[in-house]
Image 1 (spheres, one colour):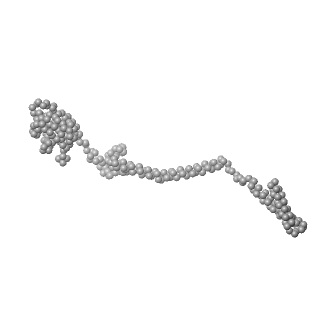
Image 2 (cartoon, rainbow, N blue to C red):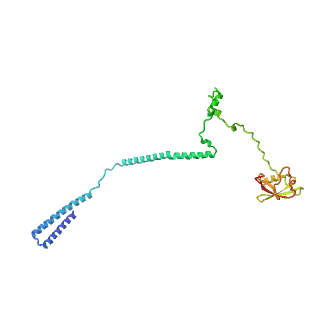
Image 3 (tube, rainbow, N blue to C red):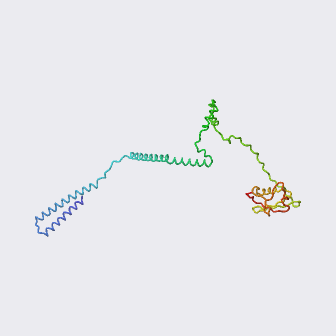
Length: 279
């Protein structure tokens, strides 16, 4: 309010000075000066009134408190939020259950059936994949004609299925008699004679690995002892055989054939060779 009075006083003084200066520099008389001062005061008052009205309006708008809206109770807002959240969760749960029932479950069942079918085919039990058929359906008419009025009401379901079932001949055939187990032959090499004994020869076996085994035998020993000796040192007669050095040919082996009969009358070197698969 003090600032408004100051402005009003400053305006009056400025107007008075302007009117006095205008009167001095013009030929207007005292009457014209009074009219000019009155008009200036009227204009100044009108401007002051307008400024006061506008300033009052502006100050009232500036000092007016903001419009407040009625606030809802906090509990009610929280309940609405919980309700909306629950509805959203129920919607998501329903979508998830529908997806699992229509997409995931059939896909898992298809994978399981595929694995089961592969397993039964690998184990040779593919018959488990079929639905099967009832036993004895094709024998009802024949059995009815044969049995006549015979009553089977006292039979259990298992007995009836067993009676109607046709077993293959291989299942009804008695098993063949078991062969007695073969006795394992124990290999016993004859005692190695000393050097001073008459009829002693030293035989050396050259193996495929490059090793050479030496042993003394009598000329009267059968050639079978050579195979036994070869088996003892780790070469099975079913895969390997004893051959002469030159010419390279298999040695004649037999229980009745002695070393002397095959031409071994002195110290000899023999080879252990693999058998020819074609022979």
